[in-house]
Image (cartoon, rainbow, N blue to C red):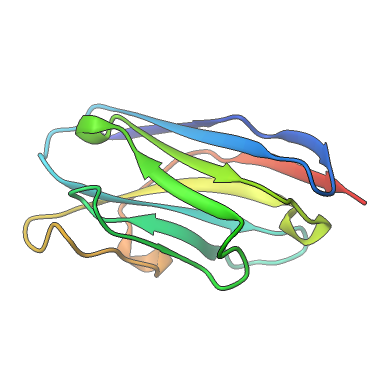
Amino acid sequence: QVRLVESGGGLVQTGDSLRLSCATSGRTDPYYAMAWFRQPPGKQRREFVAAVSANGVNTYSARSVKGRFSISATSGKDTVDLQMNSLKPEDTAVYYCAAKVINYYVGSYYYTADDYEYWGQGTQVTVSS
């Protein structure tokens, strides 16, 4: 069973930076596409933040975070990080790491929550104004 554990959340001020990490374990398949989603307070649905392809080459970010957030994967994809710069109060949310088993198209990324089979428990990010 694949296990994802997020870390790095916290309380920061507007304009600050944070780096979230997602550690993976129990991987049995060779390729996983990874992504970060977030769930703002009071919202029921998780929204897409950023994704990286299974081969670690291609990334894609939501328009709301483009130019401020970046996703990266370590060799072997044991850890996936989300670097968040110029944080805004509207970035306040619980941030979740997600993984999708990939059998083909290792260069593709996925930005729909339903595409992902595995999820972490989430880490809280709060940005004060």
